[in-house]
Picture 1 (spheres, rainbow, N blue to C red):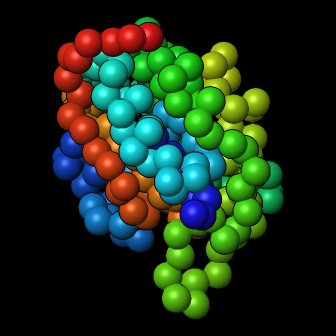
Picture 2: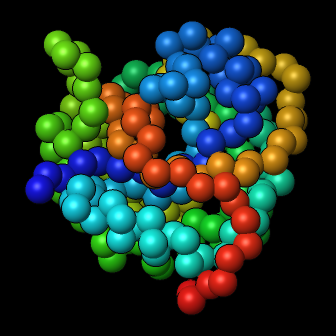
Length: 196
């Protein structure tokens, strides 16, 4: 039994991922996935199936989303990064709230560096634990800010806004600075009977 740092995410379609990868080629379609974080936390790896079953009971539908702007921000370590801001609408708020209600009781918020996915000899930034451990208190519910982090301090993109449909919801193990390194489980957004 071990604990892992996880993120439940929306994975954008390939054309949106490609835009993100063009901006930062360190991102990719396999193990550094551009994503929209919906709920972060620490999960006992024996509870992955519980999370899958819990998520499967929630009503889902495809989400019509919009990238509204490119935002630069200063991280707690005083470095600059940027993200594509996703317009916060009722549909993504409902998804976020349903997942918090259903899944957060299974999670904890005591991440340590050994819970993150890493390549051999990869050095992880200690800031990785900050985002996970503070997620529920600082970055959820009224503070929820849907976005796709681009993991770079240099970006330019002028063809905004962009509308797209999100159809993939995934449970991922997080890597350095909360990259989605490993998909543990994935589903298509669809309507199923809800118990929540």
